[in-house]
Each structure stands twice: as C-alpha cells, then as structure tokens.
View (cartoon, rainbow, N blue to C red):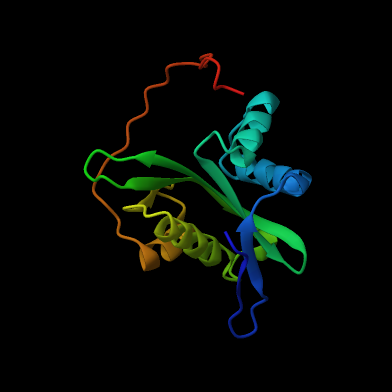
Length: 168
C-alpha cells in the first residue's frame, strides 16, 4: 500500500500507511488507549500476537496507521476473509482508534478511506465493522460513509483455545 495523505482546510496533513515493526511502541500506546476507551483488558501475550499477526504475511490481518506531524495518532486493523454470498473476499474492520488529541481532525475518515482503498485494490466485495451503540462520535462519521444494517450481533465465548501450528 502506498502512503496516502489527506489535508483539508486548517486540518493537519494525515498520512495513512501500513504499520511497520518500528511502529510497535507508538501503536502499543494507542492500543492501550483503545482498550481503556472500551474498558477492556487484553493479556500482553494476546496484544503481542495481534501485532505479530498484523505484520505477518501468513495471517490475513493488516494494520494501517495514521501519522500526523511524525506521530502515530490512530490505527485500523482489518481482517480479510472469504464471504459466502460472493466469490470476492470481504474486509472486516476489527479495530479502529484515534488518539483523543487527534479526534475531529479527519484521522478516522482517512483511516476508513485507506481501508476502503485497500479493499478496492485487492478486490474485496465490501468492508464492514461494528461499534458500540453509544459511540455517538464515531457513528456520525460511520453514517456518512457506510450503511447501518439491521443485523444483530451475537457473541458466544468459547474460551481461549490453542489454535494449532498457525497460532503465534
């Protein structure tokens, strides 16, 4: 993915690119902010596995990062998978986070647009995601770029499993 930049009016230039190994510490700080925002706890080994998967050519998981003035201010993690209603792959935007200090500056939109551009580049049928119903700030943006569906999500926690040789 080539680096892309967005600047509008008085807003700073937002560059979105694929994460690299050197981004880990800055991404980790953002990741911790993301977990705090959702009042979630993820074990360190899971966080490290997520990062390794994002950088791996084996896993269908990518991390895009948003950079403003040389600082990482946001990230998006997308998982690509086959769909059953199309021959094309689909992209699931599993995580998107923008640092509080960078919100309202077009960072979230730049990340979404970069994810969509990646999907078009690789022939995805669609990009989809979910957010908490009370995440009003994010939903304003999401409502501008995508369609809200009437599907309801269910989660059945099956516990932590050893997924075999592919599990980092």
